[in-house]
Image 1 (cartoon, rainbow over the protein chains, first blue to last red):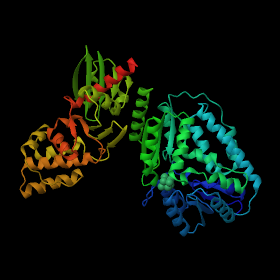
Image 2: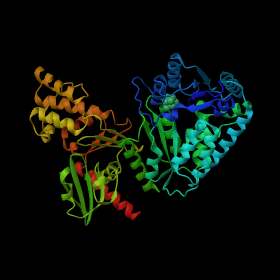
Image 3: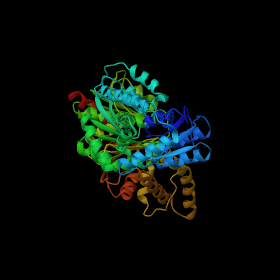
Image 4: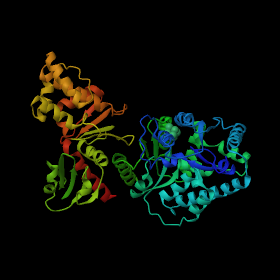
Length: 316
Length: 234
Ligand code: SF4
């Protein structure tokens, strides 16, 4: 598979994809800007990338999809793509977080992709360490919400090559962001392409993006390390562990409020009462937003965000 | 004097606060400028708030909370704001918010359509409702289908009053779908709240206490003034 372009969905370890001499393309990153409107769909994320692949608007040589422990909608959509002739591999997270089982999964992935070169893993680990520093910059208000988000969310496929990702990291300049409120964004990343800008306009600075943070915090310089790290991917584990992790992160990032983003027809929507409860426990305001199709942030959602900012303004 | 204006899709409302007393004016949206008499407002809200010269602008969600609190003198669980083209349900306790702006059923436009169908003024619907002691089932949640159901019920022998009552109950059920279950105290605001038939139907369908401020149409304009005062004092 050397040099091949592999379509992936979050979260497939990009260190393994690159170490096997392939290039990763996170299909989800194409969705927010896409104009494709699938006729049969549950969640728009997987339906849109499925259509992009079926219509050959995006070419990949193979597909690796997270087939267990996270999203079953993408599992079905990926199988439709596979049955249309694109080779696919199914990557399964162990619910128990068992490192041995995780190791088997990353080994199987490597086997599907080709031969391993460990130096590439070193490079990816180094890039992710840089991305973590960028994350801290944003949290300190030295980087805009959107720039920080793009860096974190792009760690899932390293923008198509480690070199390109390094360049993006190195080109970031320090800025002084003025903002009124520190916001944590929980749940799946927003499907609206301008969501972080809209928040920034309203004085809300995102200091913690839950899922993109997962993209930068897991890595490893060997298969053993990769397995150990990814076994802690919270979206695939028992909710108790995710809530525990979030409790710590919300405190550590001094989040003043949380916006929970979820998708129509996604099982993660069922987590709403738990996340709401966590915010109540931490005494921070919580806003839940359910989205469906990609595009710019709709007026109605803007109105809700604006009212949320007004409420935060009154409380502070 | 402190002026709060609410420029919505059908009407524009102003609340004037002078010596601790409120006075109000309501005009068609296109004439909103006449509310200001050449000056800027202290606070503006409503769908067209961004077009109004004002010291500050605030969403209808925040003004509904402040205005209701001031005019009712108490805090409610949920506010239902039925406007000409959209209906908003604000969960005050949970800071939640739902809005129906995709379809006219469940908004003031639906009742206007029905009033026209009966050849009565919108304001008369409430009175007709109270004259009926039974109501036919109107099932359709779509305003176009509901209109043909209205004809069917009349043909079946129900009186106009009874059909109006049935329509109000269908309308209330539509709105109740947006109201969170925990709501025990609900405030109804917006022009439609003056229709006592809708108020009664909502009480019946929700099984909750439904409060209507004396001037339901100007709640958001009052809320704009109240929000302004709060910002200034804080
Ligand atoms: S938002 Fe939910 S349903 Fe959609 S791809 Fe993500 S996990 Fe799957």
